[in-house]
Image (tube, rainbow, N blue to C red):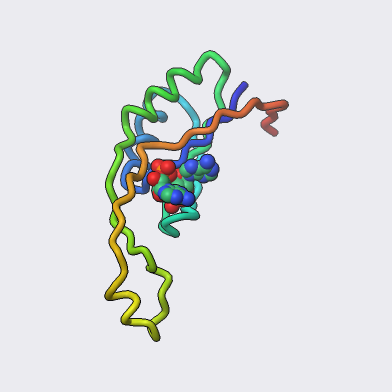
Length: 111
Ligand code: 2BA
């Protein structure tokens, strides 16, 4: 058995979950935050038999989009440094589609 951890953008989460459920995969949604952008994203947990991993990855890939996001080079600037904020350099970052980790599951129980 495998546990698929998929980090997707909030805008895609519902589409991915709907498609997984439609295909009879159980999924748990966690609200998460990216360390770089400090913006909300969604982490989905899907526990599946080994032979289902490819199908699950295909669904996640199909339903997740890549988007460009603009951040400012010193977006952590405080209110006291307005000048810094005005002069900050906008940087374009490509976010997503999905970042996926597939882990081996040692044991799986339901009580
Ligand atoms: P964030 O950490 O907020 O990263 C958002 C996007 O910013 C990333 O998109 C990437 O394009 C860029 N980025 C991240 N760290 C960077 C850095 N140190 N320098 C330059 N650019 C950087 P994605 O790669 O699509 O990642 C989307 C989200 O997936 C991430 O949000 C994070 O929450 C998660 N993630 C990605 N790779 C991960 C990993 N190896 N381990 C844990 N979480 C990961």
